[in-house]
Length: 309
Ligand code: 13P
Ligand code: SF4
Image (tube, rainbow, N blue to C red; front, side, top):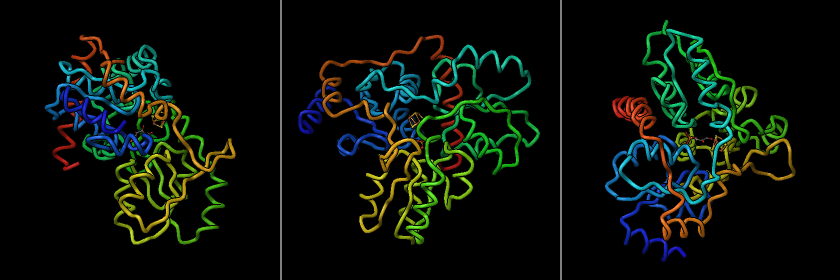
């Protein structure tokens, strides 16, 4: 399967971009594995004719917005995102118009239509720096993730107006079970994605995007980590630091020890092969929306480049 996928990529001049939350077999076959910012950066500079985005729909849309003339494929078109779904574009646009004079900052986990009414897009890697690039008294609307928004407010001292959305995976981590793990592994660091709720962030040793968490595990001199984000990222953590131990933080609603994003896990190696072979499902973005949505994404890429992110 892996050989057949690579052959199709060569024949079609296609590139496979995968998020850290994909299964290990997909990460291993991808041309590039990264967080949402890195996937957008790769999409913006690839010379391939076709991009297969192994991630969720908004990531494919972001690639398509940046490369409207390329074919952008996703292995399973049902791979959505509960956070993006928690922010319908018409309701968000109405919220924005009820608060005139606000700068609109949207997390990349949004539909193209939400990005089209946004001033600047952020990811969890650059949210803090981009918010801080605006003067302190700038009135800001931040959407859609209330947890990321609260976290950024707390570390920057801002008072951004927040959209009340959340990710069903990151909201599900159990504080109680993480505290039990901390007792069981007293030397372990708790490392957490900022989409988690505040009580979990408060007891964490390090908070960051998937790429930041990965980097932290490489450079930290600790040997054990309790990982409070989607457990797919542990695949690359183990590859980078084979001598270290990674304990997935458990969710509160099941007997399963780790927490997976059911949308991300819809993509499989077989579906990746099928989509390359048939060149579908293809991501489509309305042309008028694309023209508006590319502006805040490009602003984000420019600022990120200036910041060396
Ligand atoms: P990253 O910005 O860390 O890639 O996070 C994306 C995401 O969907 C988190 O749930
Ligand atoms: Fe969306 Fe949450 Fe899945 Fe990330 S983990 S893609 S925010 S549902």
